[in-house]
Amino acid sequence: MENPQTNPHAFCINADLIGSRSSHQAQFLPDVARELNARFAGELQTPFTVRAGDELFGVLINPEAGFRAYKTLYALSTARGLPFYVGIGVGSVELNESANAELVNGAAIWYAAEALAKLKGKADGELFARQKRSRFRYAVVVSGQPMENQVLQHFLYYIMSRVQGRTELQRQAVALKEAHPDWDNLRLYRALEGKAQENIEAENAIANFSKLLRRGDYQLVRDAEEAFLFLMSRFCGAN
Image 1: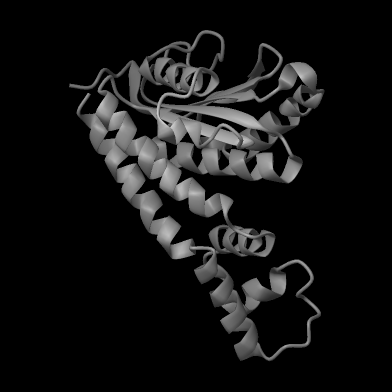
Image 2 (image 1 turned 180 degrees about the vertical axis):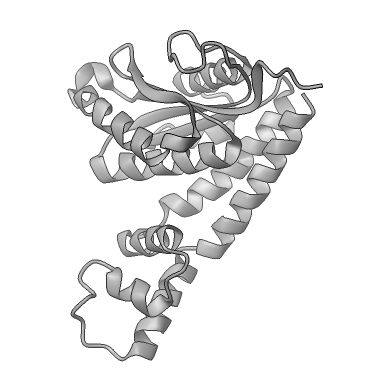
């Protein structure tokens, strides 16, 4: 029986700027926190807050909202040139102090801290070694069972490898598709940067947008994300 004083499926993001001691980029974190809080206002357990000067911390009410917030953080990191270690933890959170970033407590918080520590320490295995030169490094912990966490880490690496390999135009196309799922491909193509006034036949514009999505692995990534969240919910439900 679930405890009514806890959220058993909270999604915690604990992100730390890479190299913050040698840069002045921490000054931009409050803007990132404000943007995340505005976008996810109805889905926050703990509003995003800057802690210890260079750490971004927030808790979402469920894995679906949390993963969308994670993807938004990646987009903001890429757009603003902010390098992050990002620890993800999923599990229970006590509700009595859940609005306070300094007092909120529960397994999701501990797991996110554990994930962040994995990124900042010596690389433990090939998956973490491959991220050493990345400007957006990520780890996920949802369980006390190492193999369950490893399965999700592999899945997330698979997803992020394709996302990080997209061209700028492919990134724009995917972002538009996700933001406006009701728009047709012609309208989406016209919304791409520099395409509004382009002299092109409608059928070619539609084909070009479809090509951008295909080459950016849009459907492949979308399907993988659904499977990733399914596995996450199964692992969390078993603990």
